[in-house]
Length: 329
Image (tube, rainbow, N blue to C red):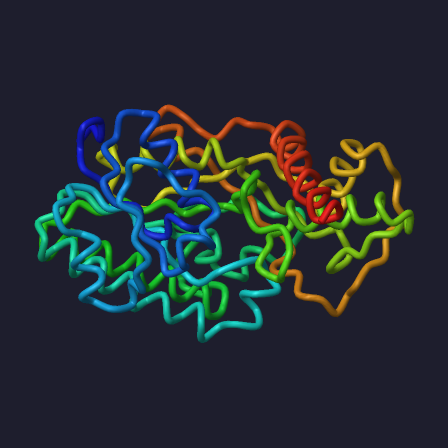
């Protein structure tokens, strides 16, 4: 299935990834007829022109039927989520996203939708394989035996299984990408839901603006991650839905860095060197996580390639501009 000319709906379009995805699809010839999010329109990160933009709670089945009506492709990104601080302190709220996933799958089946994309997460992976900062990159099969991130990870893994069985039992062509730490401009950078790249950029900018020359880092800074820039995410998402790959695939960068190295990059961009204070009691997630991209290269002949220094420079510049606007006010 090639999406050009197909009628698509993006669920979670008022969020960071969803907003970017709508504009990417439109720029690549996809007829996005509808964008849906639970937030009021004036709270969306981005609003695209020429699209039916709806504020709907997709935990409600009737709203899911409205969202799916007249579409041939659904991108299901709607979920309650955020950075590690949010995930660890809102497990029940994260689990309630199962309602959205269930009702959107049912609506897709009932409305005769051809393809359904589900945005899963690297949080589905077995925690026992992520105890060492020198982590072996996670392969798709490492999700089992199941021991995912409590709350959020279980919701994603359960919903992956639902997608599989809707394909097997009802013929709905489902596609699943396991996102690894997506970042970039026009996203959350304060308030508790922000992820590490945005949080580090904000803290470096604050230290520079305030002259404190100090930064608090959650954990010991030795925990490792890979971070995927938003442009790679949107490109990969469209490729996934257009592909014939029915099993979940990693969608993430394989450029492994420590949190200390992430701070190094942000400091280099800012032209400062800060004293680091480590908060060992703060949520820090697993000790190590990286994406094994063997299978995506085999299946799609492509992998995320935007390097952290390039993507973080763009992210830093946008957050700094937002903070300067706040100062001016």
